[in-house]
Image (cartoon, rainbow, N blue to C red):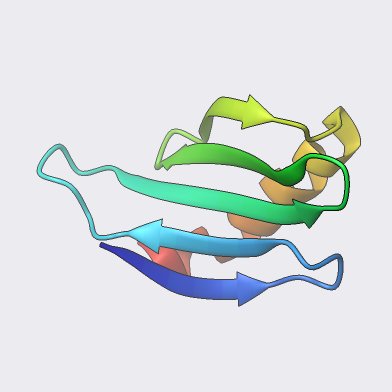
Length: 76
């Protein structure tokens, strides 16, 4: 199950899973896009490992990484 966490000013939504048995949490970022439908990426906490990135620029990923770093204590 995924839990809503935050909506950013660029319409990106951040949701997260429960803590999994291995101690990690899956954080999912999704943003609507007129051409592609949605851009998305997954960040695995606590290691901040990004995977399954589709459509986001490096600048966008850097911003989302900063947001997740600054709020991870609330997610975990």
